[in-house]
Length: 295
Length: 307
Image 1 (cartoon, rainbow over the protein chains, first blue to last red):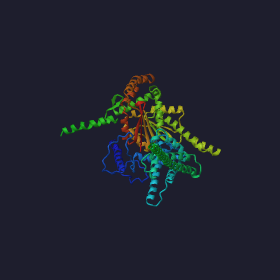
Image 2 (cartoon, rainbow over the protein chains, first blue to last red):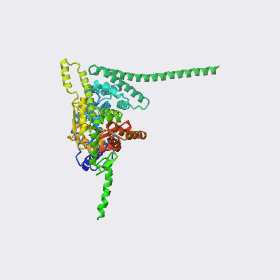
Image 3 (cartoon, helix red, strand yellow):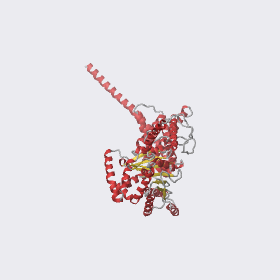
Image 4 (cartoon, rainbow over the protein chains, first blue to last red):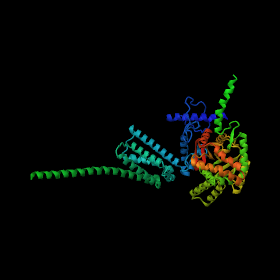
């Protein structure tokens, strides 16, 4: 009886210690194996690390017994990524997550780790898309810095970035309205707003926006509006390769550019008018003074 | 030299025994049966007799003691499980089959919805194809889901089988006589393991949890529905009053068995509280262990995953 206790304890200590190690370094080089072993890890792994104390988190330990030594979160990410394949058929639901778990060799009951309305699946997908977009923009920026590509004008940059991001929805476009409704659930609104605003922020950052005044807010609000409306147009677009959507996007970005030009024009016109009025007032007061003096 | 063995023995045995007793492990001859102290073997014997005598009136007593609320608790357990068709469930201490029947109903309705959705997509099929798909799916109304009801007590299983026949449950259901501390199943077999109002009566809870871990597939889920501790002091006093004054009387009046229901109420008090049970489940190797209190802690659902 006593020796039955030891393997789980040892594995937990090993995996907890390893999780600490993998948190410190970026990525463990052992993650390439695709075999699923859920028994105790091979003996003698990292004995020099001191055992971690018991975790006091509400949901238990953070380690996992597998050759890849991933944490619970990493396993959950893998399940959600695997589940995306089944979304076109089952929608953004617990069933898709169950199918995803099955492909990883886990029981369908593993879907019980997530909410039954598929929230985590949608949020995971949005977050993955944002990461992909970031990487894409970073790559483009590097090319420009190395001189291998030309710097795009602002409106083209914004158009391309939004189009690239929206194209990631194309495989799931049938069920995307369902995903939008899940994102609007009160429980999910903080996370979905967070993801949206950080994506918009990212795009403006790579567009070279360095404003520190009120423009920062207006720019983000404008781009958020463009993104959301284009997304909705895309839902009902049936043209080949979504041409209508991209044309709509082009028009909206052009509108935004014109609006900002108009705004600066209005500002300079306003300044000119005010200066004219000031000049007129000075002239009138000078005339009055000279008339008073001449009398 | 002679003093040496005498001094060591008490030092070694006391703390270990106290720890083991707290955790529901066998501490030599001392175990609790309700508020009595008995040996391990006696406890098993007594519990078997308790359920042998209450088996016939088990469901009626459940309804009258909990005023029917136990049905809601079991429904909530099923919703939490949210099984998809194709799930293999092991219901331990499942005696009269309440969880098993609910599982079958749930899976059947999920399956129906799945089939309806499939048909909606197949709008362009010919009549022949539609007819064929009806034929194929009609014989698969459970979607290959199965539930195995395992209980240590023959009488409870007998009552369960009778109920199944009476209510018309035949497909996807099996009845196995077995001990939760030593399950007669292979490793990595089941998707979900449930034990509803049964783990309290297991003599070695740690062994039962280890067995649960063994028979679950990787990714499988452990669910335990059990009476637990109420932290709210006012509610706790009312609950104690109801438990000790009303329930044994109901037991005598309805089932003619005061002592069994006295045991029931006492065993609830002796059972480890939520956090302790959670620690025991984690010790068995489960991950993402958490619990949900129902009715302020009168009942709690503990859940863990074999990852």
